[in-house]
Amino acid sequence: MDRIEIYHAATEAISKPLCGVGRKSLDFGPGFYLTDVYDQAVMWANRRAVERQQPAILNVYLLDRENMFREARVRIFENYDKDWLNFIVACRKGEPVWEEYDYIEGGVANDRVIDTVNLFINGLISEEGALRRLQYLKPNNQICILNQELLDRHLIFNQAIELSD
Image (cartoon, rainbow, N blue to C red; front, side, top):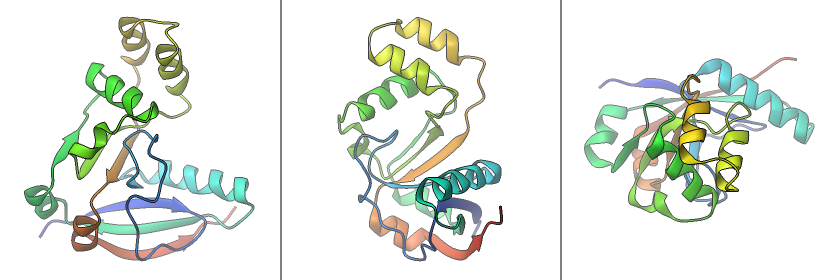
């Protein structure tokens, strides 16, 4: 069984993660969000800690991705492309396009790209204009697990690390 290490940024240890408790208008819907990019997870944990004035906690998990993919309805966005942009916009508008999937992975609509996404949502630039602005950016990766059964079966809590300042 091949397992990959992935991270969830928080201000508390989360040994039993839950799907579906988040806002529906997030990038990939109301799932449990993780990343395989360590530095990105540390940055998010530190940002949340400052906002909440609590300790930054990095939750570390092992994901049995191979077996999960055998059971899951999977959507992976490799780039900031037309499909990614339209999916993000639909989710941000509250359209439940995420309901077709158990696992979604792809670029984050973070500080580097959200202005472009918002310009497109508000009709201030065209889809082509948005894609031109995004084409040279390397996506930071996020993973959203939307199916609690699959999450419980294939995501194993490893440890919670309190990050120092």
